[in-house]
Image 1 (cartoon, rainbow, N blue to C red):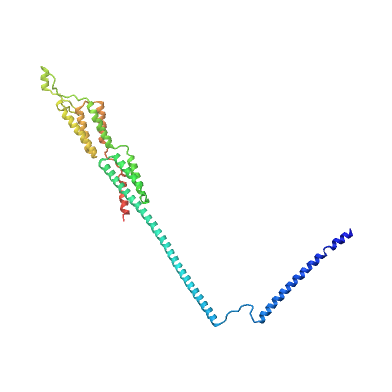
Image 2 (image 1 turned 45 degrees about the horizontal axis):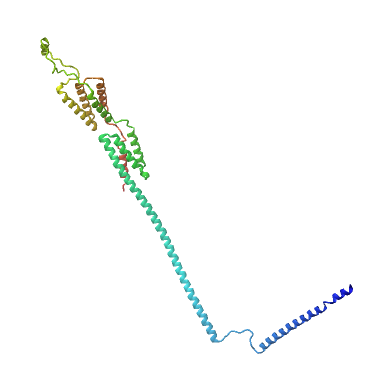
Length: 338
């Protein structure tokens, strides 16, 4: 075993010696190269040749370099001037753009003002149209009320005027809306027009007349002549009815009925014109003709009584609110007119 170990230990000796020789050879090569480089440098130094090339310091070279430098400076100056010009142009364009933006803003503001003015003008024009419409309707309502006392027509015209007034947008017409509301309430609070009641009584009377029996006449025409003492008594004594009515002979009845119809027509005309005194006179004459033409019965008494009540009632209705909206509207229109 010891012999083998000694053999194995002695085997790497040639390899170690080989590596030592290679290292010595490499070191020798490096030394040779270093010596050659040093020799080359020494040779160049000794021959006066510069290791690094030196600049040309001759006058021509300096002039040439100066000229090139001046040209570069001039080019740089031109570039600077061009750049400065472009900066100035950019500044000008910026100012123009700013002015345009400001101009656009101003134009937008002007357009907005114009739109608002147009809106106000349109609203004002619509208000003017509604005011004119309401004024015309209120004039119609006033005339129908004052001239004919037509409550239904007056109420309808006032309601149409109220619709036009309620469409006004300007707050300055608020009081006008309140006024027309009060006037409408006053018209609607009227239960019945006295003239309409009186016309209804005349219509009822005319419808009743053909059904009434005629009054007995004191004329004995068509009856046989009495004889003897009765004939003598008739010649001496004439019997006539007494009281409020004077009976109509049959020959005069048609004319009396025509006169009654004329009195009824006169009464209607007086109602239309609100002539209370004339209507009372016509009602009184109608009552007289009724007593003379027709037999007094319950139906006739009722018609006469109701006609007398209608004649005694006032034909005009005191309504302070009538026409108040029209007066208020005309006053407001004058106050807002420039």
